[in-house]
Image (cartoon, rainbow, N blue to C red; front, side, top):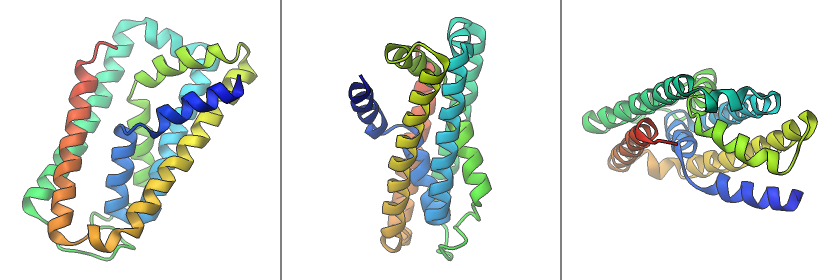
Length: 201
């Protein structure tokens, strides 16, 4: 059973989505440290969803349409905001600044907060956890434990992205390449936000 859970989790985690896009974006803005803090924020958000699932709150959110829609729209607006910001940066261009500071001065705290907000603003996590976890556990400790395993795996995977982006930092920070990345990530984030807003679960 545990092996099956790990296998499903790996497939879900390695599939690129809004958390991956945000981690890449913040790694470009603030370097490896910002990327790692973003990964920590995403994992913390997932841990909150795991706890909410374990005590039954996530199921209530999924069942109560107004709460689900409100959360979905808030999360979508956040993604669109980040995407538009990236697109504007691509249009106007920015001079290269030290990687230790980050081109937008993105701090670890800000990156962590963005990771948390991005994940908590995605009610699909509630649907996913309430659908997946009960198949492998039926008590509070087992549900929470499985959820925390998923969070830990997510953190490792997104941290690997942060290291990869930081390693390629010299290439990615070239003005033309950076503007192209900003444009692509901006489009991706806006598209993810619009998809989240219009998705009917």
